Image (cartoon, rainbow, N blue to C red; front, side, top):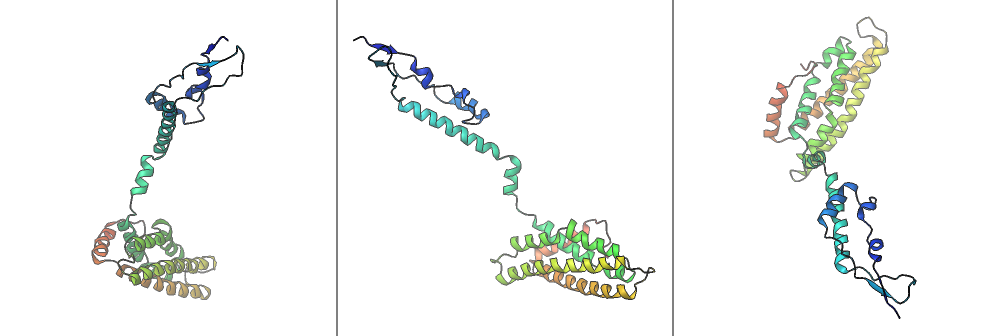
Length: 244
């Protein structure tokens, strides 16, 4: 019996990784192929006839381990590529507590001229101050941020619960205040408050007083150093609206 050496097995056994871009990321293949050890061919195998069905021995263990390390390295590179600087900074950035406290203080100041606007039937001006608090300064979000970051249960459970209640109630109060200032706009008048408008003007003043009290109480819950620091900073900030 003549024994034939089969030397054509290796190319089919070890197809190039470059021909399989779907297995790993294309950009990760370069690092994988350059850093992984060369894949060694298994020794030629024997068969007993010229044309048998070819059966090959498994590749060496070291080759399998090299392939596994190569794929794992590429997967790690792909994962690290998803961690962009912006995402890393977003994960590590703490909410700006000072800016949130200043938003609360500024909203309290923006409520001051509203009674004057109501008495002169300047409904649009009054609504501008209210909407600046809810939309530009994002009052509700600011109060929730301060509650979660400052008024934590470790500081005091009562203060933490009260801060959350004030934030949620004030959100509804501002909604009702804006609605009370919006309705009189569509009522005919001669630059003075009519009888029909007076009803909504009185409602607006009631909601306004509730909003003031909620904001004052919330500010008093804060630590003195945090409160005083941001009272000064809020006073130095410029706003496009009157606050006195």
